[in-house]
Image 1 (cartoon, rainbow, N blue to C red):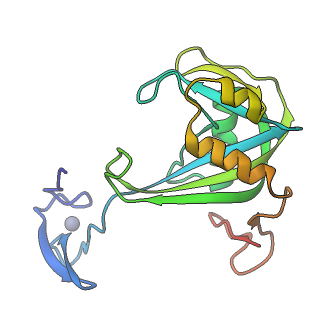
Image 2: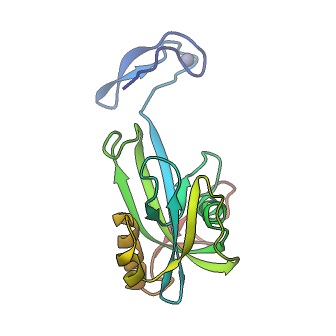
Length: 196
Ligand SMILES: [Zn+2]
């Protein structure tokens, strides 16, 4: 994996220094203080149910072009998590939906599923609000609501998506982690708190 050479904050040549029990890439400029803790990313995806049918989209791009999965994508660094998943669902499927609860998350170390970043992938359940399945024909080449039986007849439904849909079907909406409107820091700009 490529390593950093210059400080991303002040452009000084980086060195290493011990921090928290290991040597880390760090900026020698004491006024800067940059320490590289690693590459992290956050992904999000949504299970959207209509009766006993779940929303799936078909990937148009590699990797896994042609496979079906629940809609989702990466969270921008300055974007609230719930807004990110509602945006991804709308962009990929044309369905406007609203977050109900968190039903699962996966933690994967960099390199273990293809990307270089250590990733947290949060799966939400969302309530459909309006819209019919629609897609751009490029990044996404199909979208629709399907039963588990129908999915069994489709080619290449992503295992994690099907697992998340089964989790959603086995629990009541609202039984997972809920966005909290009260509690420590709740309502603070830029914060989102989730709890049972
Ligand atoms: Zn620096």
